[in-house]
Amino acid sequence: MTTMLPRTELEQDAFCQESSELFSKPLIEEYEIDVQWQKIPQRYARLDPKLIEERIWQIKEQLGSKLTILAHHYQRDEVFQFADGTGDSYKLSKYAAQQTSEYIVFCGVHFMAETADILTTDNQKVILPNLLAGCSMADMADISDVEDAWTDITNLLDDTLIPITYMNSTAAIKALCGRNNGIVCTSSNADKAFKWAFNRGNKIIFLPDQHLGRNTAYQLGIKDDDIIVWNPFKQLGGNTEQAVRNAKVILWQGHCSVHTRFTVEQINNTRNNYPTVNVIAHPECTSDVVSAADYVGSTEFIINTIANAEEGTIWAVGTEISLVNRLAKTNPDKQVVCLDSIVCPCATMYRIHPAYVLWTLEGILFNNPVNVINVSREDKEAAKVALDRMLSLEVIDD
Ligand code: SF4
Image (cartoon, rainbow, N blue to C red; front, side):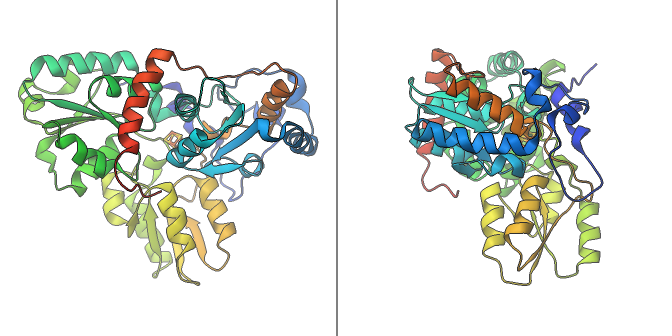
């Protein structure tokens, strides 16, 4: 056995459907979907969606400045509507760092709530409504596997190896980067992080997304001959000693289950159907999709590019469907479609159902907060070093 997919990856297709619109169902019905759900009191599962919505607005008003709700762009609309701040993972982490409210309810996935916990003060509590809203990509880089790889590689080398981790990784991985002269990056500043790293060492290990890592390496003119992939379930990552010594870039074998659904065939079909279409894709897509697209960039880049595009233009988007649907609604003067005809939301983001938001808000209201994220002091300090290095990279396109 040389691959072990995390459960979050195996569950990714659970919410896929043929119809174009995504509507939340009462939680009791969504429980029938075969993914892991955090258990919460049964009464929340049976609540009428309208009542849940009204109650959330009421509690938000009651808690006032004590509460900030943040929502990632990939959240379902029925949750997104409550957000005081929205953004991609980088923008939300900066937003969280600026908040003074006692409670931050983070409607996103686990690594994002961890990042918010790292960047906020000890007096603030960051809450993730459903603890099983993980991220399959982050789950593909387990800290003990990464530590083993780090030891194997550094034992072999005389070179200076610099670790770079994508924001979409656990706090423990960010901390490993902080302790070993490394840095965190996002999809909008990965190229700057690579240049930063090559000014300090002659070899990079990039975690956990091989596609963002490869696309960034190509962008900087690094060729396939200088890149290897590290499979954590094989001896020396599936490489020879010589290959490890020769490589400039070592890519961790992880990927996003959502963005790797997009294919060149989908792009070709879309171009046949809409000859004037602009194809825009996220850099977590595979390199062949990235080279076939007209534009490539982070979630915020995609949003801004379409918002600023000329009226009447057509856009086919290679990113998460909740965001694509929202882009179609907020840009009625343009035509916005998803590259994938199957509607397949991020199955971990989608686990934040409004009933979970209500449960966590009632916990705050009744002085019994639940699902508080606690990164250890040690990891917090080390991860913050790597995050601060990222924040010190000049102008970040967000
Ligand atoms: S879209 Fe991909 S990277 Fe983002 S949270 Fe979902 S699985 Fe993780």
